[in-house]
Length: 273
Length: 298
Image (cartoon, rainbow over all chains, first blue to last red; front, side, top):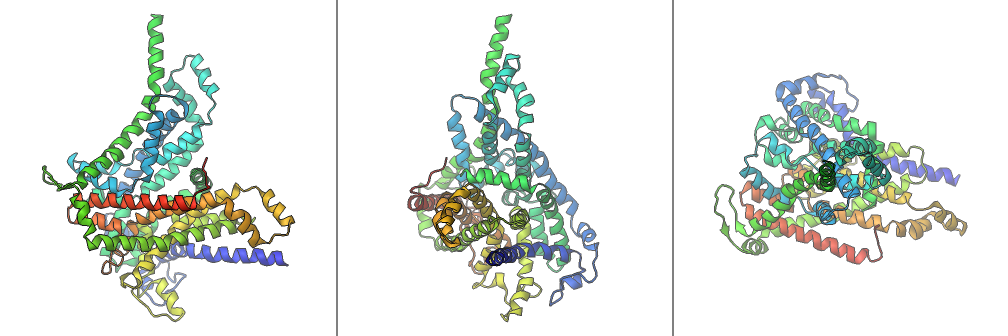
């Protein structure tokens, strides 16, 4: 009896908290299919009375939403591939070779995670300004080419790669580049998959640097465009909801499909401090 | 001929690790190390982005900050924010993790729910919450009115704005802390609990005597990282309140960006960034000193 009571309490507490976590999502999804008058009604309706998909079409007509979407894809998809590649290469180098400066370089890269971002982002803007990168795709992308977290993660993962495999390949006359392509990359696939999920999510959600480096409408990504749009068209809450839902959808879907890998990856690096 | 190919092999073998780490190292050099040094150099000048010649001030920017009420105000706001958010994230994350660890069937499902806010783009989350807080149509307003509290413009009221922002921050931050605690909880051998239970310990005693001491490294990790990220909050503030009303939510990073990109005083902004860096370092070290005495990470 006491046992049941206990587990009932646990479920009750977790559900109450979980409901709080879910309310904004549920509210967003339900409201995105309500027509404007219903969205603006008080007291609010929860289940849509006249569900419609028209909001999703209207967003594209009201603002260049397709453009924003494309920009978000441009600054997050190719850059994710580059990041995963540079992180895997560096992780491999740090894990499996001894060379002069190895620990210093690794330590420097790791310690960059502790620097508050304003200390680098303000001068980085000045540098980008001098290099003529402000308000361009190059300027948006330049900060998305590698990640300290990813290097750390790949190094940890590739430390488990058996040296014998590499030595055997060397005896057969393989170059180091060939070892990277034919042994390391296939071996690292699960870690690379997990890293690409994190990286994509991070880049898709990026807010601060795009806010600073981009001014023109044609370069805005979703996280910049949506708050602005919601400030200008605040009386069209139905459209804001539809736009928000479409902006969240990719990361939400990826997470629902692959949450095990992502959560375990975070736990893996988080628990190691 | 054979000698030549042997030398070639030696060269590629020895240069390979450098070539592998080079892209990442060059990236960090350009995007972090050089900006950091340059930022410090900027902080010693009256720095104008248009002019080529910058005026040397020495420590002038730093001295000016000490006499600047706006700086103290924003530092105070940041500390208030951290004092609210950090304990809530710590206790909340720990509570959820402990509950999830008690052998549930729906564990993965609950973990998913609590983690959803973490992967949501913070800019979009802020837009949703701004609507939740809407004084006329917001669901928060509706919920509060049903228990008899008056409607209020939560984000535009100096009495409630900061708390309203903190609620959103905790909502978005608990999931990450939960995952860290869950990983740490899984590292505790179940034999510890079994032995204590045989000795007649109840649930609360188990938590006090086994769970909490063994979670100390994770608690310290969450405490320090959560503090660091709280002191750097910006996107939520920028979208939810814009530092207002009447500077009630003007936090340090908002102040820095306002100086740099609002007033074009890049030197002053850089100096303030380094002050923030110092504050973060001092607080992290203090936490480490007083709480981490017997904590080791492998």
